[in-house]
Image (cartoon, helix red, strand yellow):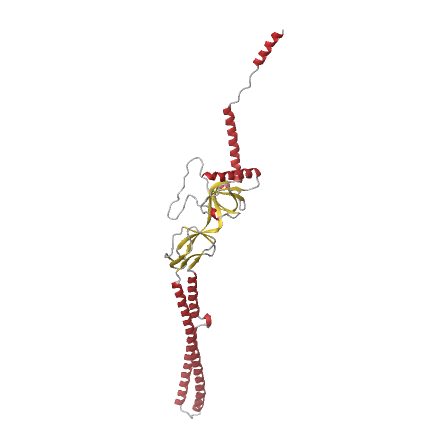
Length: 373
């Protein structure tokens, strides 16, 4: 009986169904879809709360160094791409003509003083002549009064009275002439001292000559450096024309170009991480300084012209980008301040721990990847 049961037990074990094997293709496809869905959801939120872009450039003020006076360069104190401190002499223009202009202006000022002295003497002379004419008029009036009295008494003839009246008219005319000469002398003299027009004109010429002489030495406006240097001693600098290009190193920033949907939650003062291509693996701290609110569109409407419409092909239109200025929150070594250098920038618009953590890891990966390009 036991032998009959044993084979039956083996038959029951052999009859149990085996578990079906999982299809690896389906498993992989499902995992890929899950990963893509997670990345898509992260992208939707990150694009608005922690935007990232590699459309960023290092920027600084580029200042054309313009000479305010003309002349030949007698000294060039800088070399190509040399670091310069504020107030250092960049170049010197031949001062010979401007020294001569100062000497000429000083001479004109002395002559103006001499002319004022002569004018003062003329005023004094005219004043004396007026006093003399007034005294003569008073004397003639007194004499004529006696003549008129004797004329009324018939002791003097009428002709004597006419002579007296003519003398009074002549004396009055002399007084008026003396008054006119005095006024003319005063007008020619003008105001006294430095208020005198001739003195003011001479002093203005002297100040202009001194200013031009000072301008023969051109100084660095800020800390920075000279690039694209193409002049040397002997070059003739024209007033108002650029001589060299100066890059300001006191204010360096990042100009970022973000898509419109990146700006939804971004505001001035938000934190940012900056990865410079020139320094792979290094992250610099920054803050949003300003957000652009206007850009030029693809169409124009000029007077006398036609509107040009920019067409785009495909299902999706090209996104419009706006400039965002990011200021460095720490000192940057001078060797990294290369205007036009590329950068990656990661923004943080809030305190979302998950998005911010992922973004911090992402920007650091991007920084290390820049080693290979």
